[in-house]
Length: 197
Image (cartoon, rainbow, N blue to C red; front, side, top):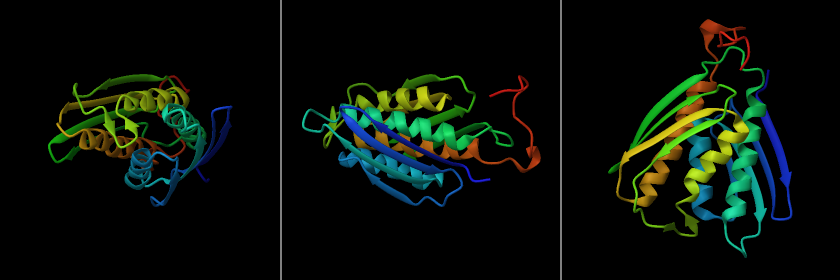
């Protein structure tokens, strides 16, 4: 069975299309109009081995907030859709990724219960190009709410804002990959004692 999600989301502020194949090879086609965000979503697809298409047109004449937020909401919804019934998956995943002086630790539970814990160094440079670094947490909040997962992201140290944000996306990609992959020892089994995820 294919594990593909496709979400179109249109508001007065944005128009978003997201397609994701959880069993892909890491092919990406990303265009949000926010260069650094495109770079981060590319990391998500490539390191998660998800085939990922993201096309967003937003009100960038105001700022990038709505574009970034609505893309993250659509991405979370597409990811949840692609997971399907979650039968036979690992469910849990974690990954620690260094990027020069920065380190990110990400742990995920595809639980059906949205919850985010997020910590990163304070006093980072406020902008990376046109990307407001405070949006990283908001991206994760929006993704978690729609994907319905529990996500813990911890950056214990780092100096360069680009590195701090990028290692979070790389570690998130790997953790999601590990959690969503099929477990050959659990074919046909839902990984929950509740009987539902």
